Image (cartoon, rainbow, N blue to C red):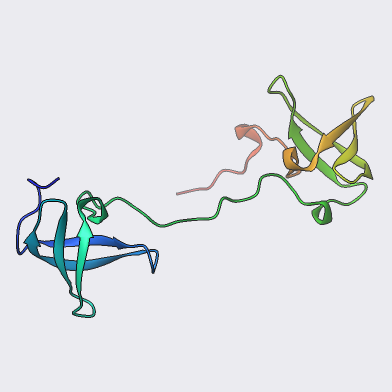
Length: 137
Protein backbone atom coordinates (compact mmCIF):
# COMPACT_ATOMS: atom_id res chain seq x y z
CA UNK A 1 0.00 0.00 0.00
CA UNK A 2 2.77 2.45 0.86
CA UNK A 3 4.29 2.06 -2.60
CA UNK A 4 0.97 2.80 -4.31
CA UNK A 5 0.36 6.18 -2.69
CA UNK A 6 2.25 9.29 -3.77
CA UNK A 7 2.61 12.70 -2.16
CA UNK A 8 0.18 15.11 -3.81
CA UNK A 9 -2.13 12.28 -4.92
CA UNK A 10 -5.89 12.84 -4.69
CA UNK A 11 -7.49 9.94 -2.80
CA UNK A 12 -10.69 8.88 -1.13
CA UNK A 13 -10.50 7.98 2.52
CA UNK A 14 -12.97 6.52 4.98
CA UNK A 15 -14.06 8.73 7.86
CA UNK A 16 -15.38 6.37 10.54
CA UNK A 17 -16.97 9.20 12.54
CA UNK A 18 -19.22 10.13 9.62
CA UNK A 19 -19.38 6.59 8.18
CA UNK A 20 -18.66 7.82 4.65
CA UNK A 21 -15.92 8.39 2.11
CA UNK A 22 -14.26 11.80 1.85
CA UNK A 23 -11.74 13.25 -0.59
CA UNK A 24 -8.29 14.40 0.31
CA UNK A 25 -4.78 15.15 -0.91
CA UNK A 26 -1.74 13.34 0.50
CA UNK A 27 0.76 15.69 2.11
CA UNK A 28 3.21 13.31 3.81
CA UNK A 29 3.97 9.60 3.89
CA UNK A 30 5.06 8.17 7.21
CA UNK A 31 6.03 4.67 8.22
CA UNK A 32 2.58 3.62 9.45
CA UNK A 33 0.40 6.62 8.63
CA UNK A 34 -0.11 9.41 6.12
CA UNK A 35 -0.82 13.09 6.60
CA UNK A 36 -3.78 14.11 4.48
CA UNK A 37 -5.48 17.43 3.69
CA UNK A 38 -9.25 17.03 3.49
CA UNK A 39 -10.36 18.86 0.33
CA UNK A 40 -13.91 19.34 1.63
CA UNK A 41 -13.17 21.20 4.87
CA UNK A 42 -9.42 21.93 4.71
CA UNK A 43 -8.58 20.01 7.89
CA UNK A 44 -5.47 17.86 8.20
CA UNK A 45 -5.79 14.23 9.19
CA UNK A 46 -3.25 11.62 10.20
CA UNK A 47 -4.60 8.31 8.92
CA UNK A 48 -3.57 4.69 8.80
CA UNK A 49 -2.91 3.42 5.30
CA UNK A 50 -5.89 1.07 5.45
CA UNK A 51 -8.28 4.07 5.61
CA UNK A 52 -7.35 5.05 2.05
CA UNK A 53 -9.66 3.67 -0.63
CA UNK A 54 -7.46 3.30 -3.71
CA UNK A 55 -9.65 0.77 -5.54
CA UNK A 56 -12.86 2.80 -5.20
CA UNK A 57 -14.59 0.05 -3.23
CA UNK A 58 -18.20 0.71 -2.20
CA UNK A 59 -18.07 1.14 1.59
CA UNK A 60 -21.69 2.18 2.13
CA UNK A 61 -23.24 0.32 5.05
CA UNK A 62 -26.70 -0.93 4.14
CA UNK A 63 -29.32 -2.61 6.25
CA UNK A 64 -30.18 -6.13 5.26
CA UNK A 65 -33.70 -6.40 3.96
CA UNK A 66 -35.87 -8.67 6.08
CA UNK A 67 -36.82 -11.96 4.44
CA UNK A 68 -40.35 -13.16 3.95
CA UNK A 69 -43.54 -11.49 5.04
CA UNK A 70 -44.52 -10.00 8.36
CA UNK A 71 -47.48 -11.22 10.38
CA UNK A 72 -49.45 -8.08 9.51
CA UNK A 73 -48.91 -8.65 5.77
CA UNK A 74 -50.77 -11.96 5.81
CA UNK A 75 -54.57 -12.32 5.71
CA UNK A 76 -56.70 -15.41 6.15
CA UNK A 77 -57.83 -16.69 2.75
CA UNK A 78 -54.94 -15.01 0.94
CA UNK A 79 -52.96 -17.11 -1.55
CA UNK A 80 -49.26 -17.14 -0.71
CA UNK A 81 -46.27 -19.15 -1.81
CA UNK A 82 -43.12 -20.66 -0.31
CA UNK A 83 -40.29 -22.94 -1.32
CA UNK A 84 -40.32 -26.27 0.50
CA UNK A 85 -37.33 -28.21 1.88
CA UNK A 86 -36.84 -29.99 -1.45
CA UNK A 87 -36.68 -26.72 -3.39
CA UNK A 88 -40.18 -27.03 -4.88
CA UNK A 89 -42.32 -23.94 -5.10
CA UNK A 90 -45.66 -24.38 -3.36
CA UNK A 91 -48.66 -22.13 -3.01
CA UNK A 92 -51.88 -22.29 -1.10
CA UNK A 93 -54.48 -20.47 0.93
CA UNK A 94 -53.87 -19.21 4.45
CA UNK A 95 -56.21 -20.94 6.90
CA UNK A 96 -54.89 -19.59 10.20
CA UNK A 97 -52.30 -17.07 11.39
CA UNK A 98 -50.26 -18.30 14.33
CA UNK A 99 -47.64 -16.43 16.35
CA UNK A 100 -44.61 -17.65 14.31
CA UNK A 101 -46.21 -19.61 11.46
CA UNK A 102 -49.27 -19.75 9.23
CA UNK A 103 -51.38 -22.81 8.56
CA UNK A 104 -51.77 -23.20 4.80
CA UNK A 105 -53.96 -25.45 2.68
CA UNK A 106 -51.71 -26.72 -0.12
CA UNK A 107 -53.57 -29.17 -2.31
CA UNK A 108 -55.18 -31.73 -0.01
CA UNK A 109 -52.71 -31.18 2.86
CA UNK A 110 -52.22 -28.56 5.55
CA UNK A 111 -48.76 -27.19 6.32
CA UNK A 112 -47.28 -24.93 8.97
CA UNK A 113 -44.98 -22.41 7.27
CA UNK A 114 -42.84 -19.79 8.98
CA UNK A 115 -43.48 -16.17 7.94
CA UNK A 116 -39.87 -15.77 6.81
CA UNK A 117 -40.42 -18.27 3.97
CA UNK A 118 -43.63 -16.74 2.60
CA UNK A 119 -43.91 -14.61 -0.51
CA UNK A 120 -46.76 -13.08 -2.50
CA UNK A 121 -48.08 -15.02 -5.47
CA UNK A 122 -49.08 -13.17 -8.61
CA UNK A 123 -52.14 -14.79 -10.11
CA UNK A 124 -51.68 -14.82 -13.85
CA UNK A 125 -53.18 -16.73 -16.71
CA UNK A 126 -50.66 -18.74 -18.70
CA UNK A 127 -51.03 -18.27 -22.46
CA UNK A 128 -49.08 -19.54 -25.38
CA UNK A 129 -47.55 -17.19 -27.94
CA UNK A 130 -50.14 -18.17 -30.56
CA UNK A 131 -52.96 -16.89 -28.27
CA UNK A 132 -51.46 -13.42 -28.12
CA UNK A 133 -52.72 -10.78 -30.55
CA UNK A 134 -50.38 -9.94 -33.40
CA UNK A 135 -49.31 -6.36 -33.94
CA UNK A 136 -48.97 -5.18 -37.53
CA UNK A 137 -45.79 -3.19 -38.32
